[in-house]
Image (cartoon, rainbow, N blue to C red; front, top):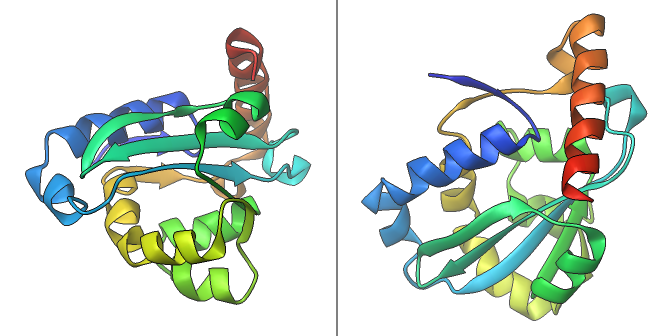
Length: 164
């Protein structure tokens, strides 16, 4: 299994490739049509100096887009924007916690969209988490100090190139 750093373009590109080539993912989400952005809140200890927004556009299970967004683009595109700390997202992606439980406990915040609407999509969260975790993820808290500084510089460069 290939390793990818969380929350990088390489991770999203590979996750999208795997999703599109795996009929089971598309089948499990065939009743889902939505546009959701996920905010990873800034945490300088994790090398994330500014919030990161990435989002997904799914139409009847077909993955249309999986990419990073600026704040303005996310607000324009997304039906829902949900937000959590990078530590919380790690728990979700490592399958230590469940999205619906942590959402109901307030560990994941709804910034845009209706609560009823997001609850309608929430039962499909495990399928989406599964699609995003077909690669081995390396989180900033698992990096050496040198790797973390390189990661911080990488994120800053990537954000600058993409105007995020």
